[in-house]
View 1 (cartoon, one colour):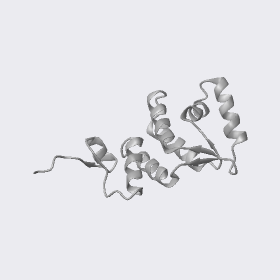
View 2 (cartoon, one colour; view 1 turned 90 degrees about the vertical axis):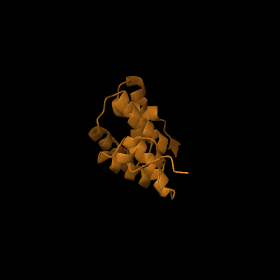
View 3 (cartoon, rainbow, N blue to C red; view 1 turned 120 degrees about the horizontal axis):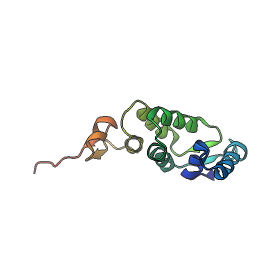
Length: 136
């Protein structure tokens, strides 16, 4: 298995830097396989979504399609793939930003009864609960 950094995936997906894109293409299309997969850490997925949104202006539909392609690709292995799928589905359904969806799904998968936040938007869209002062 070979770990992949976010920038390798960005170059592969965007093809915006020809020399690096060619190297990324060769790696992903020719050198990785089901027997020697590329490993994508969950944090790489979060960073990838952020880069695609902020630097490339990709919308939710395009990013959802990219996440689905990555999660289905035989030569790629994603950390906590089932949790990543859950977060990708929540994101695709419009339930918050991808980072919040991942945070909530990872916490849930690790047995947390709830994920607390001060972010009111995350409470409406990512399934988190608002942390408020208790009386006493």
